[in-house]
Image (cartoon, rainbow, N blue to C red; front, side, top):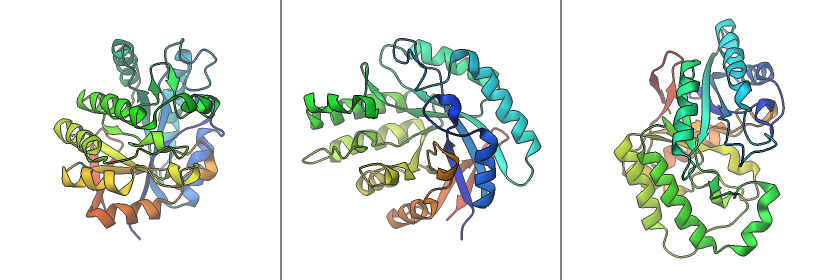
Length: 271
């Protein structure tokens, strides 16, 4: 069995997960995971997260960083890495860049990018599921991938999370997706940004990993590197179905993942 890594987990600090960081480390230890990357949600603008149920409170960013760095220094049997997950928000680019600069000064080593919002709509939020009823699914995907490609092309992210997130509740585009998928792959290749194979989709209504096999094939054909994560929101989810993610990667031709080494660099994990 290849070395197991989990490069995407959240704790109760983000407002919509459960468990403390030490519990995630204990869970990783039980799963024989060698590298665990904490990727708490970077604080969102107040207007998008007024109750702080989707992201860190700005005042908690430093506390989060100190906690993970302290745990990393005290953990010898597996590598614990401090990361952050940052939303790319149209019209809020300066806010995101400012927050990321602050995060990096606090010791964040891994910056994971994601797109959860189209305008003010958090399309993957169960609380806003009914807004899908007023949307054309194909139009949502077109808008999403345009924004995703814009985020990826910015070059500020090390890796992009769950690339085809709009399918979370089972909404899928109809017709030919090759143009959208090609757009995403080209953006990632041009900016040398890795993408994540996320097992989280297996725990969601869609019942499929992110990205779909056809999208992963487009990334592989474009020479885009991949990493892997569970997007755990509870200690029990740490390392969930990593073996299936490894098998999916191998099925389209990948022979290795990339993984942060905890020293500010990335290394390869052979499948």
